[in-house]
Length: 119
Image 1 (cartoon, helix red, strand yellow):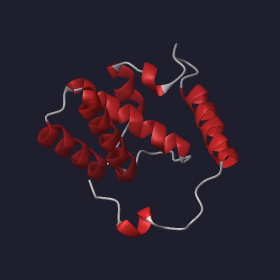
Image 2 (tube, rainbow, N blue to C red; image 1 turned 120 degrees about the horizontal axis):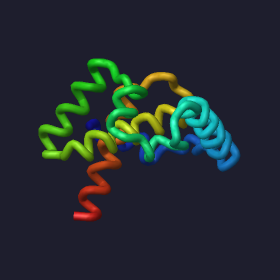
Image 3 (cartoon, rainbow, N blue to C red; image 1 turned 90 degrees about the horizontal axis):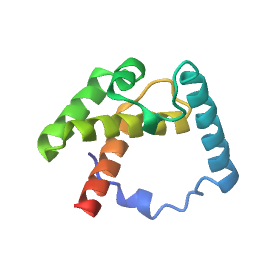
Image 4 (spheres, one colour; image 1 turned 45 degrees about the horizontal axis):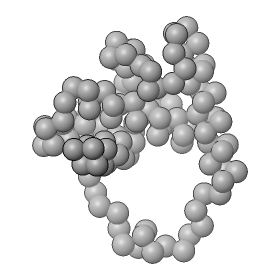
């Protein structure tokens, strides 16, 4: 996972506004409701492993990144699924149809933060 560049940390570029954030979340929720219209769930967090395999296809670069994190960090099968769920949510927030390596990378970072915080 690449570290955040110093220039990005000190950038004076404006951050996304609250209305923009809200619009992203509303769009993502709408997409999820459509995706799960034939299921008995409403969000990515409620997905079973079977549904994860059905809905979350990732490319080979994302798969390699995910595998590397699982292997190097010693993460469990549950963590594998959680990373995929987080990746899908991040892609939804960006209105992306596919999970991209950047989504997997960010999800891995969140997963390791969760793991370090609760361990």
